[in-house]
Amino acid sequence: MSEYARKPKRRYCAFCKDKVEYIDYKDINMLRKYTTDRGKIKPRRVSGNCAQHQHQVATAVKRAREMALIPYAVPVVSGKVDGKGRR
Image (cartoon, rainbow, N blue to C red; front, side):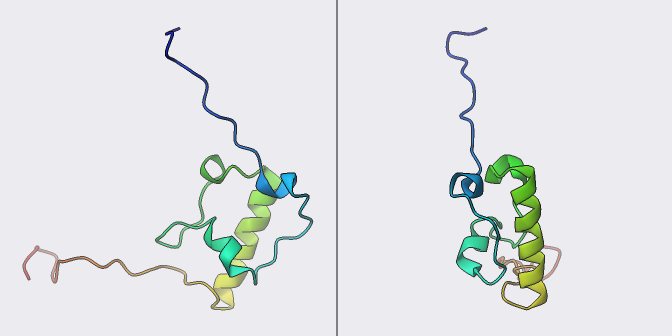
């Protein structure tokens, strides 16, 4: 093993640390932290949540999408007009 190799920093679930009982789908600012800029739900390995809270976050995001509090997908803005790269 290399002298410079090191273990990745362990992420801890923020909800377990704060002893959160229920993840509210109406708390949009909190849910935005667990979605990408494209509107997709971040995976556990990225967000650092435990399995139980990741499931609750996913359910809350899906409920918020259904209530139109957050979008299903964010449109991508690019410089292309057509599929061939011409303007």
